[in-house]
Length: 231
Image: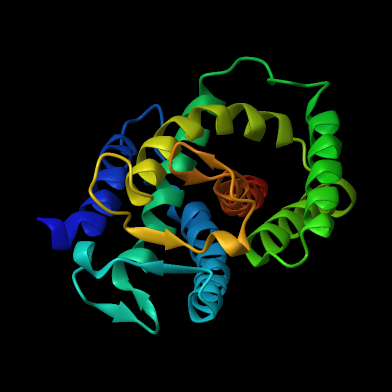
């Protein structure tokens, strides 16, 4: 079982969201023209980023929990992570969106965005010698700026509200991957490349790494959905 743990986590994460995606009140499975690009394009970016950081020793993987199948210098399970986890998070976003009759945080989405941009930028520039911190924080700050001035999205408040729910399974999955409840971590982090702040076993940067990934998924999903509705 140990050598299949990471694969089991991937599949367990997507199983229930995938099954409930066929529910008529959700129907996410039938919106594949919106969610498939929303998964694939960010996955390509993050897999390339992952390969780069793996080659630099920013993080590494414990063969004890892997099948041994690889894509480049990444375990197959790590590649699947960027498809399974985003689909599950997108499912949560859609469920939260369709359960609301009013827009959450209507007056605060922009304020939250500016606070995030300021905090991420200051921290990223302060720790330029720590690769995970600087790349994650400045990439997310840049993407949020793009939202404010180019995309002019109306869903950031809804995204932040949904992300509060997404953080619940996030802490469970990332907790296991970083060593909670098991003998050794599945993913080893080089603490010289991050802030050395852990929430349990989870590096603080993971929260914003996940936010960037899921916001990319949501942004493409919303864009593609609007295109199909307009057509």
